[in-house]
Length: 144
Image (cartoon, rainbow, N blue to C red; front, side):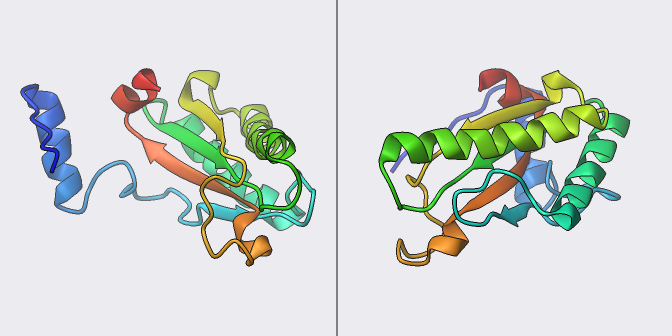
């Protein structure tokens, strides 16, 4: 078993707040939907999903201390190098849309995981073609 010891008071307070149900994912006014799905071999979201991403961007614009980690994923079809490229393209596409709506570049971190982190069984391809938004603290963003 691994034990994490925090001796920094601000980080300890954040950790206690997060353990009590608060934290970066518990912010009023922020859109709640944080998972978006793609069609086969696509990297652009449909207009409704784009509208929701724009709402996240507006929230980031009005909360300059907030940071967002955008995770791109793909299904297991094809070679892993292409899936890695496609998942990063999905995350980059979402980031560009959010930047065009006023989010700051320093607020966004992107990752492309390819098919390495499936949400569902590998056979459930549609569920694994996705984009996930994860709000993180500024300390976590600087570490990434």
